[in-house]
Length: 201
Image (cartoon, rainbow, N blue to C red; front, side, top):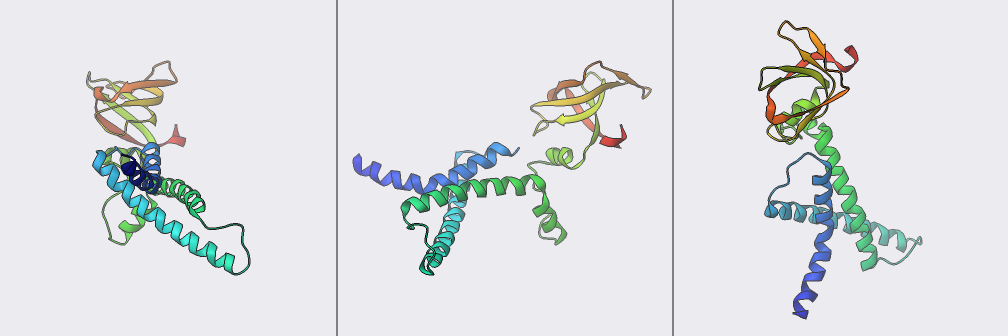
């Protein structure tokens, strides 16, 4: 048993930075967590990249130290510190690339992919189009408002609407009397995006 623990602990220490990056990514983005196997695979990919970064940093630090400027020894403790720092940096960088869409936009402009960086077309529509929306409810009522928050998927979660107003059949707006309105997405049949921008209200 002791031999097994001695073998498992170094393996976990090696893999933990990848799991930290994976945890940061799924905590800070709207992406749905894959099953356990999928998370392990992603953690292994992050681990591979992180340890490549640490090898590069280590080579640079040793080279600088050999040139006469040394701040300490490059040992297991230094590697662990740099691996942890790299896991934080890589996790945050992956979040940034997944949420701002710039990488996928650049790749689409070069016909490399047709995909967006967002987890679904639903989320992509809300992230890309800052404007008032009209929620068509199951009971045939309509609510116009500014979506402050929206569910990551169409079948779960709630809409948080700011400046909500009922939209009558004749197109007139009736104030609700509340600054915010929370609506269950299960009660929404479809969403209509207004051509008006936020500043036009």
